[in-house]
Image (cartoon, rainbow, N blue to C red; front, side, top):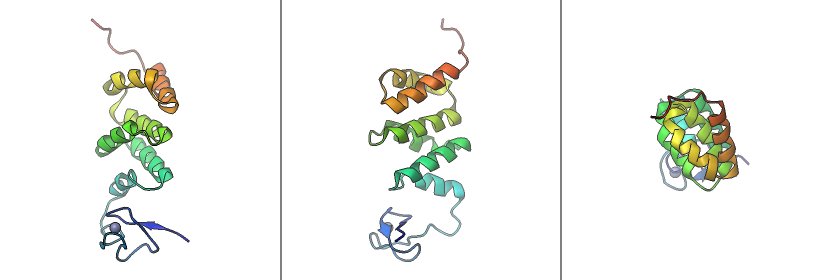
Length: 132
Ligand SMILES: [Zn+2]
């Protein structure tokens, strides 16, 4: 049986529309909700695969509004693969230089998936300006 998640509280419901059985608001997103807003919403989706896909697509689109949520996903400890996906998207959006300190830290001390991403990104980035 399919499960639908409430736009407002992410509670599970048996139908895609109507009143949420958890919070009493509309299950469906408001009528004119943009694709990007739906992707941003999906960064907190109860199903981790949906968060992974949203993180990847937002990164591909270079969506600046996703930066705070992606930073939060990089920092969470629940799923290092999700954190790694979020890190790749953050790099696509803000660039290697803006994240260099964080990338160096993760390349040494991050969980294995984060470490792999950080090392690969640092290895493929062109060297920045020489340090004084
Ligand atoms: Zn709800």
